[in-house]
Image (cartoon, rainbow, N blue to C red):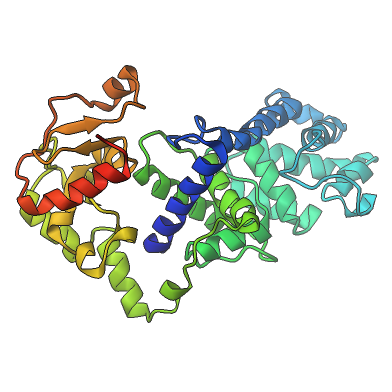
Length: 365
């Protein structure tokens, strides 16, 4: 994944959902625009309930119960995670073979394959057998695996997720590529997105949140003109893009300069490098080329403090005293470890213009 592009589209995503909802985006469940995506979790719960695979036994294989339960789990009204209806004809439905399996000899291999999917740990073998039975019905397979384990597998709509991956610089195509290896890489890409989101947010991010993030980018924001223009960056030579990425994610000169200057988290004193972030005071996207690499435009912060600072939930006075947004409740402040005695030690006069910019941008008095 291209971290520069991810950062660009993440900021556009936040702007989009905050504009649509009129609310600050602190987490996927708490914002009314992203709450809309909760239907996926509701569909998952309803699908698992209809499936009832925990009640299946070997004795059910071939009798029609497993096929019937699976059909009900698919044909949930308004299930837009899988186009299952017969608008293109009954035979075009992805699960048409389940409906056609009226005889024992037809039902048994189908029910054995579905039973094995939910009752065995060999996901790869199950995927391959289901492809042999149903063909390369990627949407159907992704949905059935989603019902198996939403912490590992996601439903798939190839056209839109390919578009999202292109936007974010992920070199993966899923359209007409239905295979276990491709599905594994698809889910791995969503884990990358989840980790990218988690590094920029305070609240916990799930794999389903990452799925929704990609969908909103490729579907809603694309249709509504909410995507930023990244063509000038994409047109740069690979070496220049690599240099920008290194600087942006704190692996180049900027992070090294901050590590030399601060040596630890500027606020908490934490010295564990693995959790420290090279944070721009004036955002990268709004900084000149000189400001992007100016050590005085940076703070070395532990991950939680960095996320709050990046989201404008906290800022700092010229003397280094912490300023906490009034939008944070006392309980949230306690859970985040934010209190009035926190302070940056070691500020220089050259930090002050950047801190002033941050305060004004985030409406701190």
